[in-house]
Amino acid sequence: MTVTRFAPSPTGYLHIGGLRTALFSWLTARHNGGKFLLRIEDTDLSRNSEEALEAIMQAFEWVGLDYDGDVVYQSKRFDLYKEYIDQLLEEGKAYRCYMSREELDALREEQMARKERPRYDGRYRDFSGEPPEGIEPVIRIKAPTEGEIIFEDGVKGEICIAADEVDDFIIARSDGTPTYNFVVAIDDALMGLTDVIRGDDHLYNTPKQIVVYNALGFKLPKFYHVAMINNEQGKKLSKRDGATDVMEYQKLGFLPESLLNFLVRLGWSHGDQEIFSIDEMIALFDPKDINKSASSYNLDKLLWLNAHYIKNMPNKELAEKLVDYGVSIEGHDRLEILLDATKERGKTLVELASQIELILTTPESYDPKAAKKAFKGEASEILRNFADTLREWDGELHLPADYHAVLEHYVEKSEIGFGKIAQPLRVSLLGSMTGSGVDEVMAIIGVEETIHRIDRAIFFIEKEK
Image 1 (cartoon, rainbow, N blue to C red):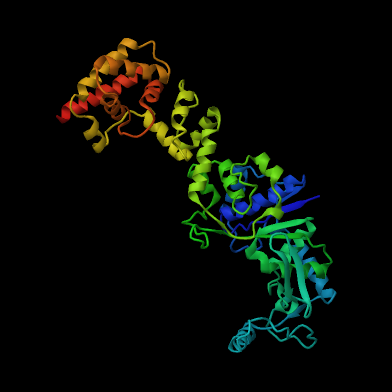
Image 2: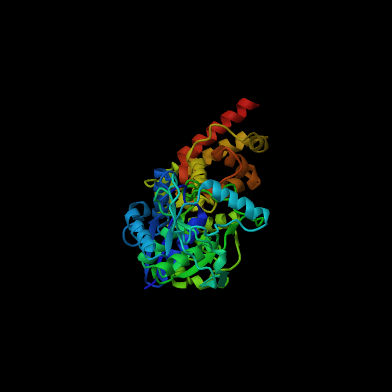
């Protein structure tokens, strides 16, 4: 059975790079009918944040990435890690190192002066003398001193590293707390991981983890190291580019479906297909198809996808989501017309909410440029006559097509160009030249409110003369 995991650290919020890794791992498990596990790597007790942990869990719930079994917390497994540290010490595969900070600093200076890579020189590897006083030892694992550490990476191919590139690294600090590469290897093995999918910033942690696997007789999983997400200039993604808290995307009005669709295409593809439902992702995703090269974050692409999902979402569901953005229209008698008129114009739920508010709220003022252009000449008389026409047709007006018919009738009867009524009417209804079609707006707000807004505009025009 395929078993994958995602293992965030609660020292910061979940960013989209982490969410993409989680998505790739989740899809691999779901595609193969396996298990996707969630582990919280919270061994750094001084830096853990309850707020960050809560945001990680919220993000998983928001995007709908479900996990199997209980969440594993490394902070609750210190006794287990100590058992394995003691086992390695007893078997002679690890040892206590009494090297002081001063000694380590001096060694590094000497190595750098010789233009060597700074590394521990193994001086306590076979130490059997009297331990120096006043030094709490760290525990180091015995790494191989010759040969090569080789593993097959599912993305990058065979990785081969000379064994002497990996020194006897620390597996427990002087206060007894275990280190990252040690606990990750133990947890991945004990949790039954078959496939470890993670960012390629972890690539050079893998040989160290293999040393731990081999020392404890654990079976190696398959590793996949995914290239980073760059900004559009090909540089590391920054917060300004979009490397922000996943929950910030919710606040900005993005749908989880569009964010996941966007992320799955950052480093994976299936022909020329751009839009994938969750079911399609599960059916088609294979980690062997992950691209070797870095992917590029493109906000325009994300907005395009988000607009697609907004346009294709059932209006009832869309109305429910808009509640979180300050718009409550679930009981509106013109719900279908209102959303059909606005969802083509909103790339995000924030923009959509703004478009809806624009229609439902009587303008308190008018855009100066729009007013200057639209409220000139005979505008007030044209508006007044149109309001009279609306009164005549009241009772027959329900749909945008009905209001459009009134407009056409009025233009023909008045022998004026369509723009003569359309422009002042638009500014009267919305306060500016932007927004949905005037026939749609009138159908949404009804005859009474339309006339009310026209009367306010006439009052404004005549006051300004």
